[in-house]
Image (cartoon, rainbow, N blue to C red; front, side, top):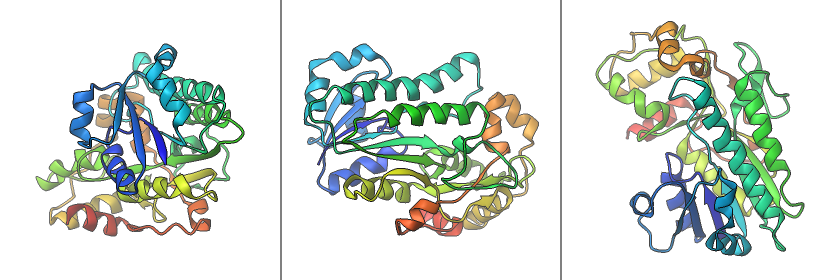
Length: 309
C-alpha cells in the first residue's frame, strides 16, 4: 500500500518505518528535518522523503506534496512536539498545540480536496484525553478530562474526525512508549544503571505504558484490517504504579531503585508539564482486547526483559 507518513521520523518512527518497509508498503515520509538526516534515520532508497513543515498550510501547496496525496492509499499521522520534556511556557504550549492541531487540520483539508481520498487514516492522540486521577480506571468509553492535555487531545481528535467520509479513521490514544533509545525510559536508563534511580514523586501514581514494538505492531495491523476504526487506547493491558515500575527496572538492571525524585524538583524542571509524570492515569486497552490484538509485551517485566536483552 502507498502510505503517507507525518511525525514518523522520531522515537516511534525508528521502529515503525522499518516494519512498514518489511511489510511491503511504499512510503512517503514528511518531516521538517533535512533529507540527509531523514536518510540517516531510515537508510532505504525506496522511501520518498519530503522536507516541509506540515503545520504550515502553505507547505501543502507544493506540487510534489499534492502528487503524493493523489496517489496515497493510507495516511499515518503521528506529528506532535514532545509533551513532557520542557517547561510548559506559553510559547512551548503553543508549539505543542500547533504541531498537532494545525498539522492535522492541514492534512484533513487536503485529503477532503482529493477526488479519491485514502482508504485509511491512522491518527495519533494521547491518553491525556482522559485527564488525571489517582483512582479512576479509564477505557475508550470515558469522556474527556478538563485540563490542558485533555482539551488538546479533544481538539486533535475532532480535527481528524473531519476526514473524508470514504476514509476509515483509527485514533490511537498513546500512553508512555518504552524502548531503550529514547522516550521516558531512554532518559531513565543511565540514571538507574548508575544506581541512582528511583520512583518519581510519591510513587503511587499510575503509569499506562506500551512497548514500542507493540505500538508499531498495532499501527501496522490497523493499516489493512477494516475492523480497526474509531478509538483505541495504545497501552499495554497491565498498567503499573510508579513504585512497581522503578522496582522492576532496578531488578532488571541489577541495581537498587531507592532514591526518589521529589515532585517539587520535577516541577521546577518541567513546570506544569510535571503533571503528566506526577499524577498519572490508569488506562486499559478495552478495544484492543475486543479486536483480539496480541501483545508481545503484556507486563512491565516482559517489556524490560525485551528491551534490556
